Image (cartoon, rainbow over all chains, first blue to last red):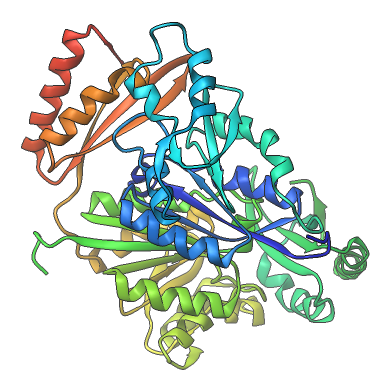
Length: 249
Length: 249
């Protein structure tokens, strides 16, 4: 794949605990930040329950519409961990013990501790490629363009390093932020005009409250640094004219 | 709608800033917790970019598959705030100045401050119902079963009180948690057996790391408290037998 190609991904968060509000998902932001840094744009995120048919159907849509799909959750040892079996069904693959995975966990645990629950974690779609887990032993896995990661944020983070060589990104998406002591409605018209003159830069406008004060962050995103610089200088010219204060955020 | 009916919802998070990883979404957890408390089960969450066609297409799927859809983001004054116009198009409605909304904002701002940017915020689908905003004036709105809320978490939270009477939930989904000093694989087989005996209770198992120690939270969810109690006593019997420590989480 040429480095100039646009590469995109979907993130599929699997877990009733996110949908009930019990658990605050942070894996989306971790994965999205990392993917952006290696030139992969996240098109879509979906959060779905631990329901086999839903996992299969959603996965079969997302894996066709995106270069990559990253799933989180449902690969542990308990009854509600059904991601691996669902992925096998989505690809019409056998669901079986992964021999290399078995050896890894057999060596990881003390003698006698590699029990039935733990053995469930190396049941995977046939011929799955392992994603090594430097934190807690049990590997993730990939099948074609689908990469299955755990739901526990610290474990997920520790596995991204080992994934990097398996993902081929496009040009990294560059960004630049300017935070202003103003409100969106004061600058909306001017920013719209600047956006219209800079169609290759995506301009985002995000209000914030920080230390009791209102402000707006303007975020410029593009694959081309020179286009960001040009757009940025137009914004700086405008805010200088209007004497709008630039602040740290 | 009878109180016994199952009522479900989808959450649609609209915003490039979530997909780029720049902003950590917290509105999902806020909305999901609130919806659960009024008997509405969240079936699905999607995060999509500020792209008109994507918003229209996604909304037209979700509003047919769910009793309610809650959108967040994209209703501010800037060029990237395209939710209201997209909702109008999804419903084939005119996009126009909302007269009541106009009066609210005209009264909210000081004379001369109700500028073009701010006036954009009361352009809505025709006949939209307002959702009042006690924090910053600009209202959200609903059309049929679609409720459009802002992206700023503190503003969104402040608007839920005014929404409550517009949402008819089913039986509240009750839950009970037990946190244990163990690891999932030690209890997986027993919990699977208990789940199989208690098909009306959804049992979730969630590993955690807290104060440097491993643990597992078991979450029981059902609309029927007596079924939760019965399932809970089976779990307590098991952990007493195995001398597994119950901990605070």
